[in-house]
Image 1 (tube, rainbow, N blue to C red):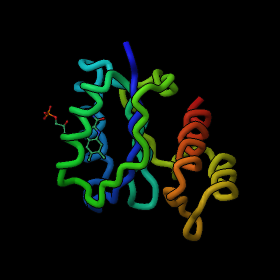
Image 2: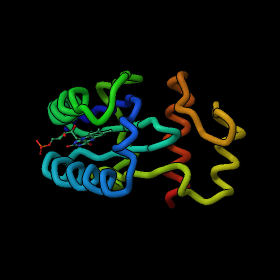
Image 3: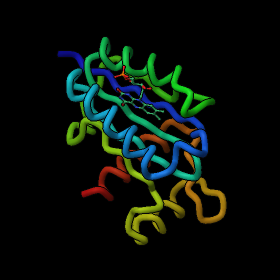
Length: 142
Ligand SMILES: Cc1cc2nc3c(=O)[nH]c(=O)nc-3n(C[C@H](O)[C@H](O)[C@H](O)COP(=O)(O)O)c2cc1C
């Protein structure tokens, strides 16, 4: 089956970043994505989300349509959509990770490589850097 990869970033509503709310979001993602064979990674940093979704275009598009309407975040900005893409994030239905919880050595490396505000990693504007960051986070997760 032909796969696509969709990447976007957004700004979280502050109350969504509590652990209970994030756990609820993780559950929703797991249930739907497993059913639709969609995989990916949802990165949280400095009040922003960065998410990559991979799978059949029909299902990725369907999920993204719901995500774009979701009131838990705003300023949803599509970064890249590749209509045919080799999957890279197939280990998880949707792995949610707060960058601040990753080992300090990785956080230090991220601050050297990517834009940041003080000690907080910012989600890059440049799609090439965004791809690189997602692959680095994947590597940090082991
Ligand atoms: C940052 C963010 C990421 C999300 N990612 C996914 C996702 O990967 N898969 C998914 O099914 N829903 C995701 N959602 C939730 C959807 O917006 C929506 O609430 C959900 O698909 C509705 O599921 P339901 O029809 O089972 O209630 C996300 C929401 C937010 C705010």
